[in-house]
Image 1 (cartoon, rainbow, N blue to C red):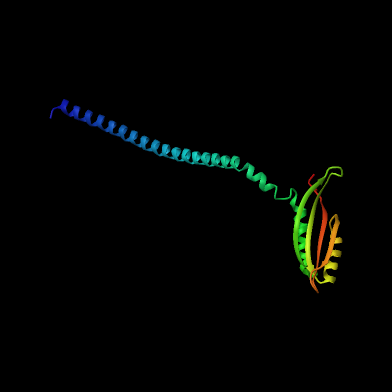
Image 2: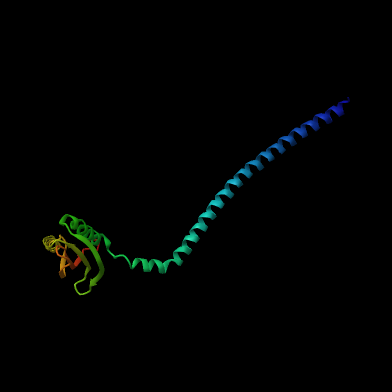
Length: 175
């Protein structure tokens, strides 16, 4: 082979090697960018799913606004103290030997005195002595309370019943 042919082969091999290295680097960069793009697509997909979930939640929130208002009306506004009072009365009834039923609970606010009250009516039955003792217990509960009405009646030869309406002040210490 002649010297010029050998030079051309060496130059061709050198150009081929440089081109191959350049091509290899480009393939590597494309692969690297493809992986990065795949990660960004996954992040975007997760973000869109969160947005869709949020939008669906907002829609449910708007659609159920009226239902939530109705449902809120079934609960007392400041339940903490009223629930404690009801739990106390319901736990005292078996100890006093009477069977207790809560007939009604009404929530109201005295605008003039700026006080919040619940009026609760209880029906209970037992022996005459136990019914009278339970009424005394209700008169002395450790709450700001007023007995509004008491009605005692004979239900059978040994069973007495009573219907008591009591008004209990709800104290709100958060204001």
